[in-house]
Picture 1 (tube, rainbow, N blue to C red):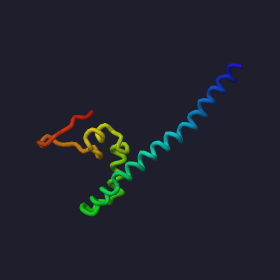
Picture 2: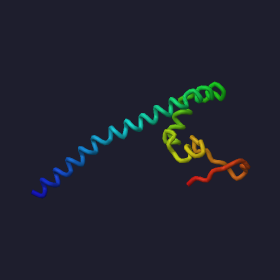
Picture 3: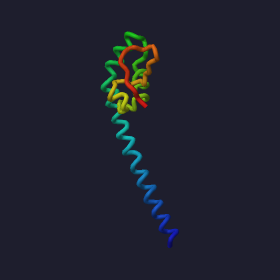
Picture 4: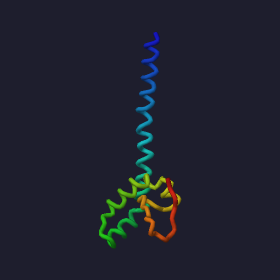
Length: 96
């Protein structure tokens, strides 16, 4: 009896996980699409000036910023995790 209960509990848990993963993935894909739509025009403009493919710039920005959701991106507009050295005299943001 107990073994059947454990099997049923495990099956329900596994089913819940299987249903949840696509929902999470769809949300993540939506964030990626929104990020690309927001920054693609700028990436193409920068590509023409600096000769860095827009796809590379967008991919790196997506990766480093978590599709624009990271704290560093939202508070400091730093999409690439760029750090400054000791010689830097401009504005800085401390981030853990």
